Length: 64
Image 1 (spheres, rainbow, N blue to C red):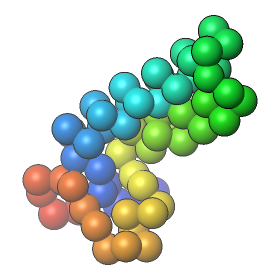
Image 2: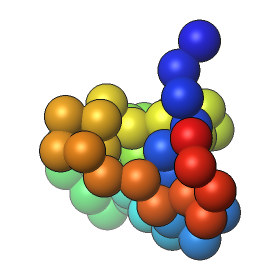
Image 3: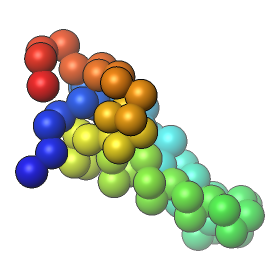
């Protein structure tokens, strides 16, 4: 479907940030925009970031 452009370390960081933002939204500590955490979590799960494609970036160690 999409070429992988998110590397392993990037995926872990994205997943952690996404989960923290979602947790803040769920537990009422963050604003409604905390649900934006779904985006980094989703990009971590599929290993593809549309913004990276637009910018010509790739954090994978291998060629994607």
